[in-house]
Image 1 (spheres, one colour):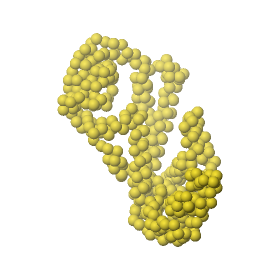
Image 2: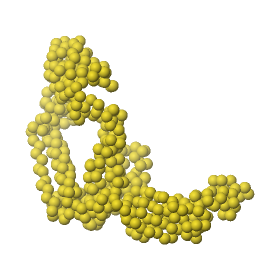
Image 3: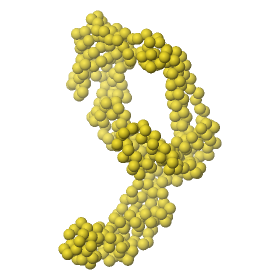
Image 4: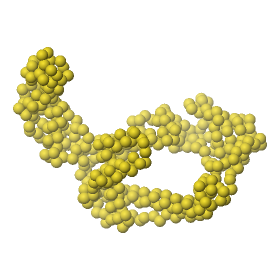
Amino acid sequence: MSYTVKKLEKSQVEITFTIAPDDYQKDLQAAAIRISERAAIKGFRPGKAPYDIVKQQVGETNILQEAAEKIIQKTFFTAVQTEKLQTIGMPEVRVEKMAPGNDFIYTATVALLPKVTLSALDTITVKPETPSVGEKEVNDTLDNLKKMQPKETTKGDAATKEDKLVITMDMFLDKVPVEGGHAANHQVYLSEPHYIPGLAEQLVGLKKGDTKEFTLKFPKEHYQKHLADKNVDFKVTVNDVFKLEYPELDDAFAKSLGQASLEKLKELLLANLTREAETKADQRLEIAILDQLIEKTTFEELPKILIDSEKRKMFYELKADLDRRGISMEQYLLDSKTEEDILKDFTEGATKRAKAALISRQVALDNSITVDSAEIEKEVAAIKQAYPGDATVEENLKKPEVLDTVASTLQNRKVVSFLKEKIIGKK
């Protein structure tokens, strides 16, 4: 076998292979056995027919076609190993010549990991935050907890800002009913911000049985893109008005939440809120470090496959987020955008994520940051513990690609810890 390597733009290489008949003869023999296992060859048990008999029955061209994939896999892998190429994804293969008794010639084009030249870590300056959590944050959380346990009683007089309404709501755009814009028993807490700004304010003062028509402008960022930044007409009928009475913030309230006293509940909330604030501050710190590293690092041109991979991940993350909010992708895309449009919008973010991944990999290589099998096993055990008895999780954790992802995640954590320690002296 011989081959030539040609460097292309966008961190790609083109490898042209020439394999002599003598070099692929064993592959033909193996291909003939596979064919004879599938096709009945009279007088021979499956897989036992001699090569010449199989050739006579199906033709040598068909045997070569059967062998082609194995020939390509073997020779491509050999060249990649020999040249020490760090490839990404599957190669794009184009067969140039394939005829029995002749040289087998094909070209493989494949993306490479781009070269990354890291900035010196002492050029990165990031100031860590000191999060502040106090009485106000604790009291706000207590207030929210209180509002989760209201006592509701119907009332016949006008709704105040402290009440809850159950309404029948219809929405119209240019006098045409909005698809999905009818809600028979829509609950609105008048003291809380609604996803349609201004709706609650329009309902204050209404009584049971009242009907009101009004127009509101939807926010620009509304998930239903055909309604975003549009004036929408509403027709609302009040089905019921409820007065909301909330429990007193006392020891009895704390005990209903499993705490010995209100003071103990406050202590718990302060600890939890502090921990949450510290976690968020740490995440912002990590982002700031990576942002500066991305800005100061030199990258060879990123191959399209890297960016496309990150786009696809971002799309699945968006879909998962919408699922959690009870919104289908069809509703999100409705009329205004296609999946392709969304992926195009992700280009900038995907490029940034791909660069961050390349930086993490380079930092790990330069500083011998690795993950061993014991660490992977420990993380797998923790995942299983988080999803006890989940057969799907158990099965997925046996897949090599999932274990690779686990290893990559652990290595990224180590890299981030290393960067924080080197840049700001924080583990």
